[in-house]
Image 1 (cartoon, rainbow, N blue to C red):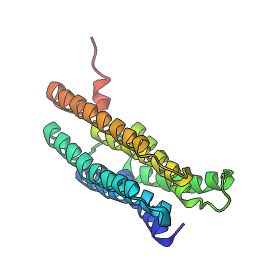
Image 2: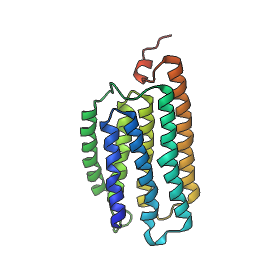
Image 3: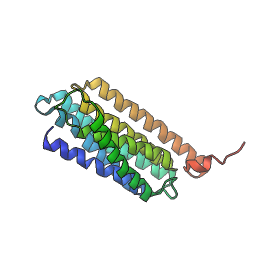
Image 4: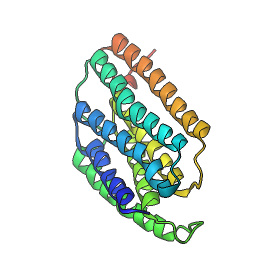
Length: 214
């Protein structure tokens, strides 16, 4: 693994820390955009000297989609729902950050115990992938605002993608485009749900929905 890929992987830790420690949805969406751009670079850096036009097109598609289109969709959902920040999460932001740091340590430990198919393969991508999966799970269970839960889902998917890039020797375009399509459909549907929740109940705090009685 080259130095450029190591740098990108280390930088991928920063957006996850923003997701855990920031109450401002705008900051989280910007961090998601940065994460998408960095993720788009991974296939090119992973293959190094075996980069083809197909891989370059895949990387560009990921950068455009995850770095710009998805954040734009979330920005529009945020404006339509008229919500700017997470106010009272189930787990506070300081506690979330501490949990995230602990998960990073756990990720290093798990990777050190994991038998890799190739002994020359670096464990760093798998560690960062596990870390993002844990961060996504934390966001899903600890945040009340539906938009933050959407971000949690996307971070979880990004972690799976990082692990896949680390272990896969080849990355068929149809497979990766299928993943992108799944994410697009999921965010599109979640955006519709968020809009209708906000229009009907004047908020998107999922905790308050549990108080609804027939």
